[in-house]
Amino acid sequence: MAVSVAHGGGPLVCRHCNQPCPGYDKRVRRWCHLDTCPLKTVLVADVPRVQCPAHGVVTIRVPWAEPGSGFTALFEALVINWLKAASISAVADRLRLSWNAVDGLLQRAVKRGLSRRAALAPRKLSVDETAYRKGHDYITVATDQGQGVVLHVAENRDALADADHRIAFDRFHVAQYLGKAVDQVRRQEHRRWLGQGDERLKGSKYQWLRNRSTMDWHPQRGFTALRKSSLKTARA
Image 1 (cartoon, rainbow, N blue to C red):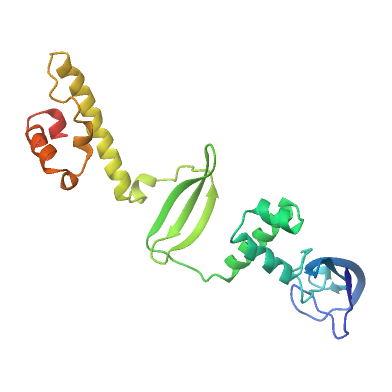
Image 2: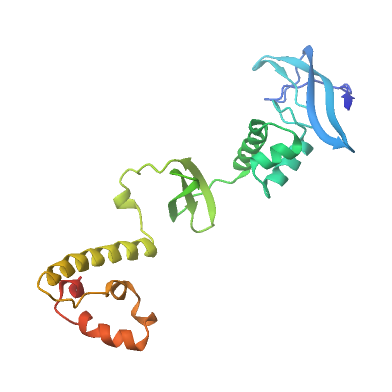
């Protein structure tokens, strides 16, 4: 169903500088609107263009849609609301749109949100990477720790310049690196002792890596002698 909209008169202004300008011509434009009952609804209007001294020939702004968009603001709001609960593909299928059309609406919404966001000066910055698809497709996310706000999302996980002087590693990864180092020492020492027929380190892998406070009394008692020994693993 097509709904025709006409300009109601009044001065024409440039959409960039809001200065009154003389009319240049008109162009027929169409916007996808919310369905009316079961009928697909489209707004149709002869939109004036003006001759702006500063910006040249430009189309005036209409109150129901953003410049360059083929959808009304109400339709875009519906799509963004659905995207909070479903994927781009699912929303595109339900609304009979292409994947690129829905993604374009999403990108414009993100751009609007970023333009409204106040300038931030974070004192504590978190940088992390995460996989967003199967395989090895990663994104890098920069976050303001103080306010819990995502500042930037970039594709890939490229190295940062001078990262070793700028990054404070979280406790989980520090513990992970230390655990791997201890286990590497244990494996090397275990092979050497096995060559001499000594199995004192056999089956002790996870004892070295576990938190002592979470160990039961019996295994902790048996492990104490190893931990206090002169083994390289104990020193590690």
